[in-house]
Length: 377
Image (cartoon, rainbow, N blue to C red; front, side, top):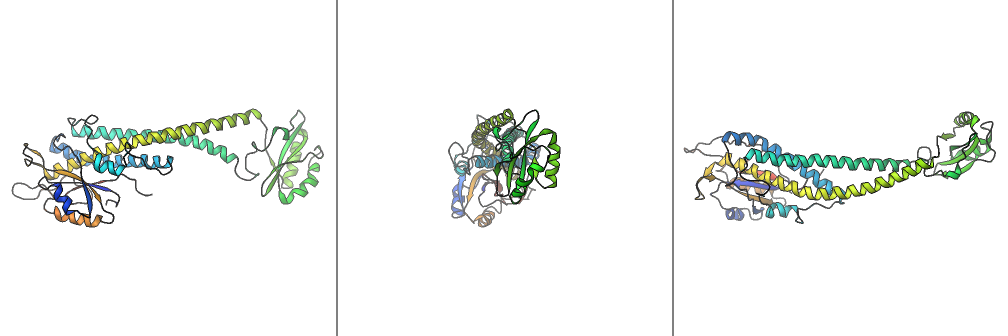
């Protein structure tokens, strides 16, 4: 069932005019031409059409899904701004401006080859989008890892941006240890830290940073009693944080973060532009597949006619409907009554022939949903 915001491409026998439909659907839907090049598309054999009818719906679904992904990605990168097609909003383009692009999709190409070529191009867009998004997400993941280092309390967060070089003494015999103390235990720690090991430098405890729960102290001692100091801290529930000050590593991290930020900004801008361009390209190709699908179902349902006075031609004409808000059910009911006698191809004796290629909900006319906006998640 089409959603309210969907367009509906329909086709019916050539003996009814577009003007007839416009009058009958007044207040229910806007009616625009859907320029399916029925006289120029290569029909091939009935078997080939029936075989392609089984596959075209899958190609159509792939095309819509790819367009939805490009649309959403563009919105995510542009802060909710929807993409357009060469500056035209997508609804206007789909209903009033789309036309078959003979330069890209030559009508003399066999129908299956044409459909598979278009579907292949759309599949290529989806794969390229996946690769580009994965590359951007890897950069974002790297930056998030940098951010996580500065998150949390002093028990878990990184210390590299807190501890400065002059907070550390590191020599052949002496070292500075980082100890995290609960604020409620700070008085106890200051009274006892000099006795937590045999060779702790008196008055060396220095408060380096604090948060709402903890205080980070640096304590200087001789390396030979480091294990004794750590054991005593565990017994007193004082937490020793393993930390080694490395100016070169910190500088390299800062440089890597700045490089990743710049690259992330560059790739975000590039992906945004790529999505804008290729959403328009994908939507255009999707509309071509919709046209092929309408053509196939129409030929299988209505056959050919000499109605146009130019020899035998597909007995069809197609329009694009923009349903009025809340009028989809009424629109379907009206269309059903208008085309109640046009459900299928009739043989000479007027006996109904089974409609080949029909899929999904059945209507007495060819109906293909055209979704230019992704469904709300």
